[in-house]
Structure formats: structure tokens, C-alpha cells
Image (cartoon, rainbow, N blue to C red; front, side):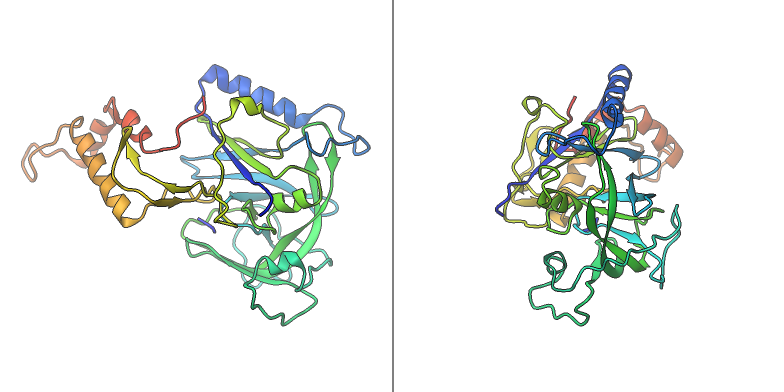
Length: 346
């Protein structure tokens, strides 16, 4: 939805779990999140620990996922939309606010620690020929594919982070103070965006540059809703992970490169698709050629399972009857599962 030589790996774990295994997974992950005796005086293993956040939400009926991040001093909670399709993390803030959208928490009160216009983090948000009108501050504007946008300034503030080894740290990280927002068509009532893209301004990149985590970001989504987001590589067993290298051609997006569309385990002939992973989108988008081909294949497959009446005739099913027929379709889940193309981690 939204929009080296450091090697970046992006781990996508979509979990489809039974009730028993789901509960076991949640218990283990919450145990890792809570840690043991948390103390800021503990020495942190900077290359062997992860930062873990519980994810809230679901695909349906909520339609989005979010995490809670504690920012400021004293720390205050904010609900942020996870977005691997953009870099900048921003909050609606009282700077004062010109146009802010309804949110679950009061507006963020920005710190006085402004990021200068010529700072590398600011430069990462602008084209090379960008001219600084206000040298002492970094202005930004981000626009998203759904028509939404945020206008503001870049500031630094304290992020309260819990590591899986029990350590709690509060690094100062750059974020956007958004004082003018336009909601997009897929707007969700949240406090802002958590930018997880590959650019220098993303939270993960900033943490990596400070030596606080490895440059690894992953999210696990349970089939029952919720899940976990983590930074760093200290949480999982690499021997049980299938890695897909991200293309170095894209500096801001996670993309495995050129892809081919398959349906039902068979090639469709649609090739050379450039795919990006975007957790900020509720939908999977295809170009017109791929969409039309997939629609025809889906209709053809469903027509073999769901009985059709004569168009316009007395035996033509009503919308309700069609809905019931679809619910009774024993193979519908199997058919629709074929559309994912990424498989499931069980």
C-alpha cells in the first residue's frame, strides 16, 4: 500500500496452525517477549538477540495489523500500521496539527531534537537535487498508493525497546512528526505508520547502524489473528527457515526479483512479474494482464464445482443462494489457497 553493500534478508513466516499448536506457539513467543529479569544494566549480545513486538489485528473482519510502540520520555504507547512498503516511521503530532485524522491516542508531542536538512537520514527521503529551504530542519512528504499522505518534519526521540534476552534499551531514533495528513481509501484508525522498508530512514536500518540488531525483519501471522514482529536474528532457528534472497536492484523495497504466476501448481504463462512484499496493504495487486488471466482461470475452476443456473431463467440462483453454494464448495479453500503463491509455513 505504501510505499548495498549490507545484505538484507526479509523473513516472511505466514503460520497456519491448528488450535493446539497455535496455543503452544503463542505461549512460547509470549515467554520470549516477557523475558526474565529485565534490567538495562545487563550486557546485550548485539548480534544474537532480537526485539519482539506482539501483533494485533487480523485479515477479517479487522482488515489490518498493528503493533504498539512506546515513544518519548516518559514513554507513551502508540498504535502503528506495519508497512514493509515504505521507510519512514511517523506519528500524527501536535506541531500544531493542521489536519490530523481520528486516532486511538492523543497526538504525539514532538521533541525539540530536530533532524537537520543535510543529515544523511533526511537526504534518504529526498531526491539528489533537493534543495534545503530550512537548513535546521528536515521537511518530509510521503504519499501512498491508496491516495493517503503525510506532511511533517523529522525529529529524534526515545524508543523503548524490549529484547528477547531480557535487556531494555531506549535508543534515540528519527521519526516523522506528521502535522498534515490526508487519509487514503484504505485508512485505518491508528496513530501512524511503522516504516519497515530497506531505506536508511527505516527503524530497522537505524537500529542496525547503531549496532543494536542485525538487519533482519520478520513477521509471523497466525491463522487465528495476531502474531509477532521481530527485528534481529536471535529468535528463530535458521535451520528451519527457507531463505529467499532479496534483489539488490531495489534499494527501498523487498523484492525477490522477477516472478512467474502459477495457478493450481501449473504455470499460467505470465512471466517477468516484479513482486514486492508490502505488509501495509490488505490486498494483493496484479497488473491487468495477470489479473485477467487469473480471473479467467478462477472462474473456470469454480464453474466445475458450483452449479450454475440458466442466465435469466427461473433456475438462476439468487445472490443468497450463490453465497450458500459458495459456502458449500468443498474445494473453494483449496482453490483459493493456490492463489497465494508463497505457500504456508506449518
